[in-house]
Length: 149
Image (tube, rainbow, N blue to C red; front, side, top):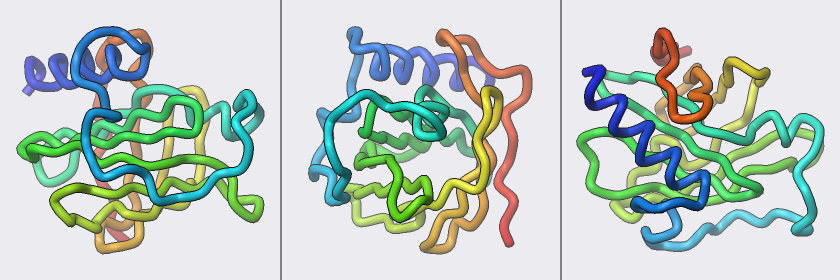
């Protein structure tokens, strides 16, 4: 599993850093969420930035947020989900569209975020999921698991 996780982080780091590798923007369809403006991301929204890793049902879940764009990859699936992340009505939200029609992580409300962890409450059946930040393409020391409520 460590080799698979390392590969996922490497691909996602290239994606979030604008380097080579497959990017979330190469998948379709396009994001359907609306976000205001295109300025720099600051405050709580700035804390969302980066690559986040979790495990769920024995699969790696990688969430990458760059600016107001979001991408999600789950091992074993052939398609990236993509969309937007940002503030709506004072809450940090993530909206994703998956080309395979999966809606298990279509809308997520950020419960908490800091420099090491991100907790998102997903609508669509996934429930609460806790991610660990993957800094600089390095694997987190322990990938958290999904906690369903």
